[in-house]
Length: 161
Image (cartoon, rainbow, N blue to C red; front, side, top):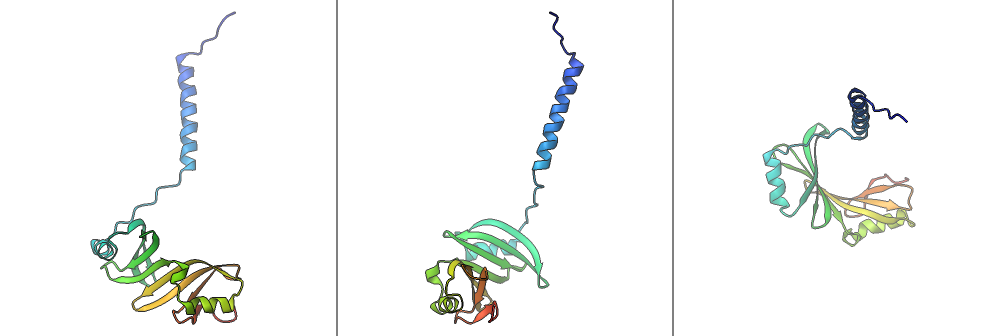
């Protein structure tokens, strides 16, 4: 019985084809790398001064309501913390994750009154300048999230929803 041995050229073409298919397949399954946002020194300094123990998870740069800003998503002492700054390091908004027990009684009472079957999910306190509000995720309600002032007055959804 005679063995057929492929020539070097045939082997080279076969290897090249396999390599091309593998490379193409890898290229189509990877998402393009998202460019890293570089924080201005003033923003990085302000964040580190305010939250020295925080771990930064993500940084984004955007313009919201005509205001250029940097949002820093982080964790601080095991809780979520999102902070927005202007490029000059001026603080815009702080959103802090809270335990349910840290939500004011007026807020939980207002939610229970409007959505008696709802349970609280993720709780956050947002501070913009001196204005504080609470954003609460709900389970078992016709809405997913609600926003209230510390005294339990509704921001959203408006009454009747």
